[in-house]
Length: 58
Image 1: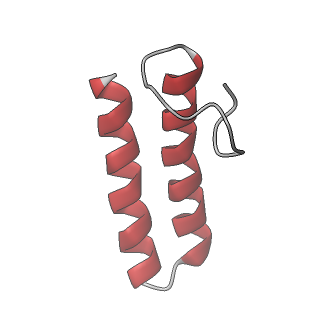
Image 2 (image 1 turned 60 degrees about the vertical axis):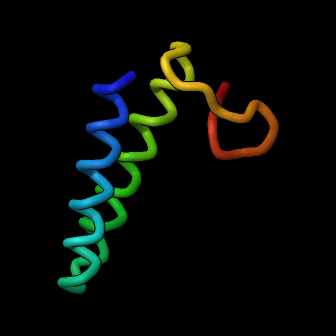
């Protein structure tokens, strides 16, 4: 779980950096990859996320 969280945080930081530099395409890609790490962690049961809603595919 810690690895998934670390990867998600790293991509969040990258996305913020890209956004601050008006590189919106790479910002979106980084944010998407970060969310994918969270979603993957949730799917395999490493992360506890709400089951109702549309943010995760659990």
